[in-house]
Image 1: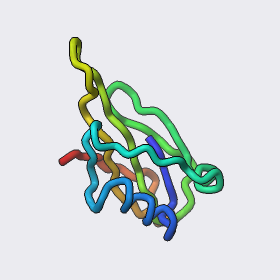
Image 2: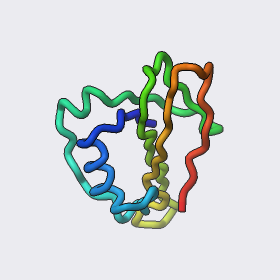
Image 3: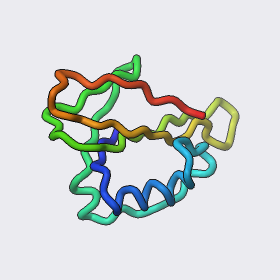
Length: 104
């Protein structure tokens, strides 16, 4: 899981990567190198087996929450799944922010 502040740069990057959608199939995921400064503002974590994850000490603001869920079935040459994201607004008043990332 990645937590990325919404900025003009990250908005342009997501628009290019996702082509106006919130999900990209595995076979369509573009290879885009991240600007090192952009990467420095990105936080990552892993989810548990149920898909739950936590980011501690998140400052108020608007964020992209993005992940890639991919697997390769036995005997298949290509991966299935894809990349998806959503936007969350953290006000600073909530104790926990809960949401569900969904695909197409």
